[in-house]
Length: 145
Image (cartoon, rainbow, N blue to C red):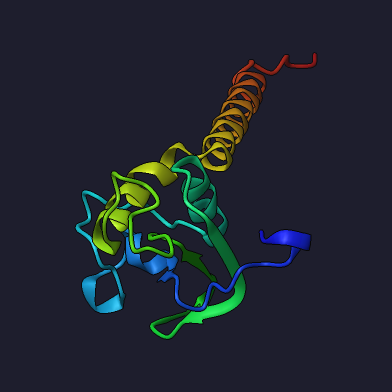
């Protein structure tokens, strides 16, 4: 953010929609990189988190949608070059390199890793509950005389 807390002019920054790196989408649906380099169902917030880990300045626009994918809102504006035209991150010189790096970084974001841990814990609880219920139902019933 700029001085006084206001945002810098990000109108000229690169737009990244989640569909660009979604490995579940076809090229016709907006995917811009290979499926191997993409990730499954990324969100704008995860993309912004990945940009932060790469030391890239970005702004999330939650109210924007991609014309080919209007059901999933969100767009991220990323600053790739400084005012002199030099890359802000020497490893990322263009938008294509950015998309590939994001496809690799989003699955390792804190948000996604924690969500996967929660899902695994819930699955383990469900399996234990199902096993306990099955155990109860397989006990032989005592016949009354």
